[in-house]
Length: 443
Image (cartoon, rainbow, N blue to C red; front, side, top):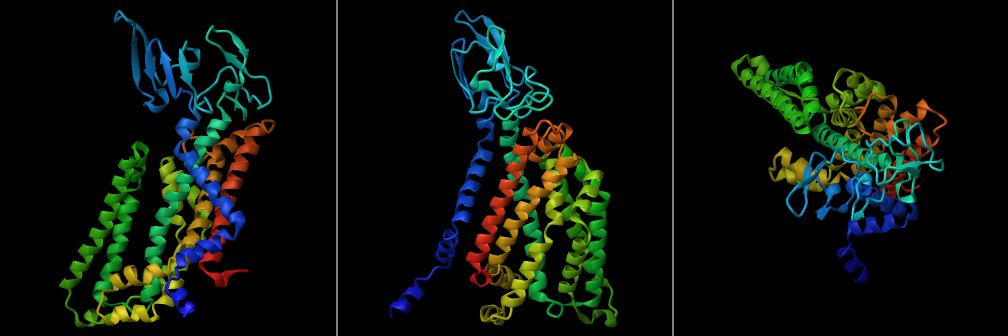
């Protein structure tokens, strides 16, 4: 009786979490991932050359929380203009501030310290210009604790802000890959090659519509999409949305045109080999070296971090699709899916409401591995100097700076450790999640 009661209150989520917690290393990695997320979210307030709080000539300012283009006019008690502070060019360290709270790292990733150029090491002599204009030994608060690069940019600040770029690349790119992979994998696994029927003429015209849609939407409009992302992310998304609408409209128009052809032989129904199309697409994409494919695309389009994320996402969906397809092939023969079909539910409802939610556990593991892979690919592209624009600081671009001067070991060691730890964290979490979600895979 007690055993039956326990089964009634059994929760797979609690069971999986308890299994995950047994892996102490993975649990520590999960906490470290939360720490990385906190660092990424609060990066502008952890590393910033502008103070968090300052009192200057009787006025209270919050420079780190304001826009960099902001300008403040400072007036005395008589209403006479005394000073104008333009936030993006003001050297706050040279101002006579009555009260000030600096960020933990008082440097921005793009800020250049002209007194500490030419690869100043963490333990080397560092100079600082005080309020009186004297060049002195840098106090502990204003030391570059991880050193600088050739033009005086602080390495610690670059690592902090690079955390945001790396996590964003992993999440956005794998979000795109997950959407494509889950959608195509679910269709391939559920319908297979002999479950979806369509009149031959509609089938042929659908393929023609897809061809022309992709040809115009992403072939002819590739420069419009590239220009859109070079202007702003919203403009780029807008151009992508237009291309997607073009593909959908092309398919709809050709499917409507198929109704005008009344040849009996072409009206006979035929099976749509969705599984074959998706599987051959996966094999085709996997046969091309992924890094070479991404390098080729980035050589054609405008350099942008968003373009890099989209390319990684569009080329990284194959593993997710294979996992989803395998799970749907297994689940579609189970009783609850057959019951949904016998009740007359549409295929869309059966797939996305009944079958797919029960097939995502191994897919989440593949996504976790994919995030680590995306971070590594972005770092490799930035290291080669073809990933993101030169003004965007990433861990890979910092490594590239170290390659230019091998004596500046801090530009190699610290970014390398950051990349290694982040990828290890994701891989350990993914390994533990796989064991927790599917006990049969335990080694």
